[in-house]
Length: 149
Picture 1 (cartoon, one colour):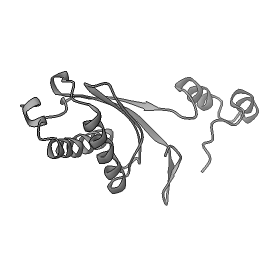
Picture 2 (cartoon, helix red, strand yellow; picture 1 turned 30 degrees about the vertical axis):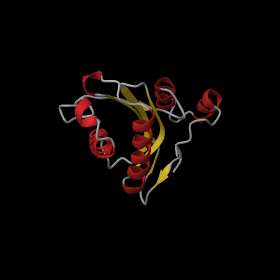
Picture 3 (cartoon, one colour; picture 1 turned 135 degrees about the horizontal axis):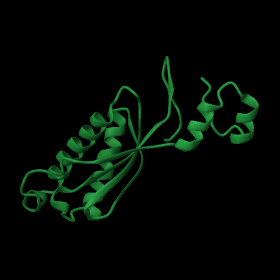
Picture 4 (cartoon, one colour; picture 1 turned 60 degrees about the vertical axis):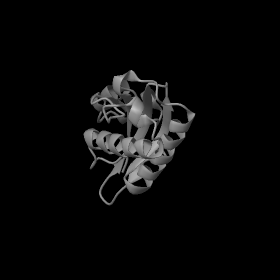
């Protein structure tokens, strides 16, 4: 779901690219763990206002494209995902306790980046600079950037 989220007083489209490395960069994300991870993310979506648009891994780290609401900070999104997924992976894959002997699936760090669906940073800068010049804006973006409420 990467469409606008409508609330009583706002309309948002907040997308984040998050990357979580496995602790010690261990290659722990095989097919079974990947299934558990994705099933857990579906459960997170049902309980929290965190929607997973895409999930992919490269054996020792996981990429998430998530959408959320402005009341959840990036830090809160990250800690929610890390905490719940780690608990479920340890619970369903007992061998993980031996592989990840420190008791953590994830490193303490993460990568986060905002993702613009409708325009790049440069397009937004030009849009803001051209406020009040509707004709010029229309020529530049041909209606691609819809900020109407």
